Length: 453
Image (cartoon, helix red, strand yellow):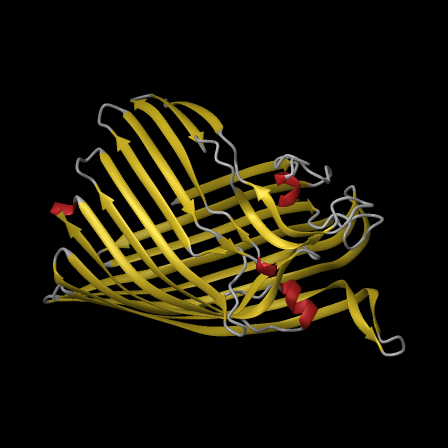
C-alpha cells in the first residue's frame, strides 16, 4: 500500500496578452502589462492511497484520491474595447473539491503459443464546484456575469482484451461505457432580443437550475503484426469523448458529449540490436464539436466539427549505453469541417530534438530543442515559427547531486499563446486589430543542489 500527498500554492502577477504591434513598435516590452492588476492565484492539495495485490496470474489495483483546487484568475484581453469607462478585466474563480476511486483486475492466461490478458476496471469521480465569472475593475467586482454551484459525477467501466498469437500477431480489443450526471443551480446574465426595440438587451442575475445526464460507449481495436522480431506493423482505431462543461450546460441546456473518433496506421523497427529505433505513422481524428478562444468572455466557445490528419516520424539512436539521440517530426492539418477553415493557433509542423548523456561516472547532460512552425489565426493573420533550445548539465554520486539548467539558451524571442482579434489598449485610444500574444520564457538559469541521507 502506498500513500501520496502533494500540494502547492502560487501567487503571481499575470502578464497581459498584448497587441503584437505595440511590442514591435517598442511601445511596451513583451514582459510588461497594460493592466497591472492582472494576477493568478492557485492553491492545490492532493491526497491518495494505492493498494496493489498480485497473486499467481491475477493482478489487482485500487486507488482512491481526494483533490482540492482553488483558482482565481484576473485577466484583460481587450482592455477598453467592450467597456470604455471601466475596462474589460475578467475574474474567473473556481473552487472545487473532487474525490474519486479507480481500480482494475487483470488476469493473464497462456495456452500453447497464445497468451490472453483480460482486464476489467471501473472509475468513479465526483466534483463539487463553486464557479464565478465577473466583470472587474482593478480586481473589484462590479458585475457578476454568472455564478454556479454544481456537482458533476462521472462513472465509467471498461473491458480490455489483449491476445498474442504465435508471437507475430497481437490483437487488442476494448470497450468502455461512461455516464456523467450534472446537477447545479446559480445565476447568470442573459442576452435576449427585445421585440419592441429590435435590439439586444442583457437581463441580470437570471436564476438557473439544471439536472441532467449524458452517456456514451467508446470502442477501441488494434492489430499489431510482427513478421520479424525487429519489426511491428500496427493498425489502431478508437473512439472517446470530451466532457461537456457544466457552465455550457447551464447556458445552453445542452447535455451532449462531443465524441472523438480516430484511426492510425504505422510501423516501428528496432535495428542494430536495439541501438537504432525508428517509427512512422499516419492518422486521422474527428471531433464532433471543437472550441476556440473568445476574447469577450476569456474562455472557449464551440465552433463545430473538426478534423485533424497527420503524419508522425521518430528516430532514436543509442550507439553506447550512456548516449542517446532522438528526433520527432510531426505534421498535422487541422480544420473545421463545415467551412474548411484552419483551426486557429495550430501549427502544421512540430519537431523536437534531444541529445542526452548519462555517464556511469556520474556526469549527465541534455540538449533539447523544440521547433513550432508558422501558426494560422482568425482574420487571416499568421505568427512566426520559432526554435528554442534548453540545456541541462549535472553531476551525481552516492549522496550528492548538482544540476544546472538553462532554458532558452540562445534567448530566442518567441510567443506562447497567440490570438487574433480587436482590442482598445488605451482608455481614450483607438482600436487595434491583429495578433495579441503572451511571451515565451527568456533565457533562464536554474541551479539545483541535492543531498541523500
